[in-house]
Image (cartoon, rainbow, N blue to C red):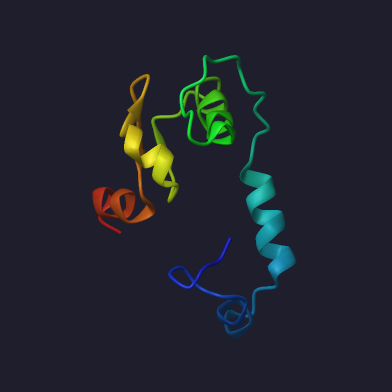
Length: 93
């Protein structure tokens, strides 16, 4: 996914990478996770609970998000919730 902060389709084209190649690359690295049952957590936006419900069976250490409701939690069952900038700073990238 590209945003104003992270790049654009134009950046991909200049690098000689087709969007379809990038998508296929991400798909090859992905694993489908079935959401587990959880009690409601984010009442202001219940759809955000799906992220949490997938993070548990995926055994995530970190959820990276820009969503204000998720970020307000800071952690969920020992899973840290960080912005992309926070995670990159931790990884020194």
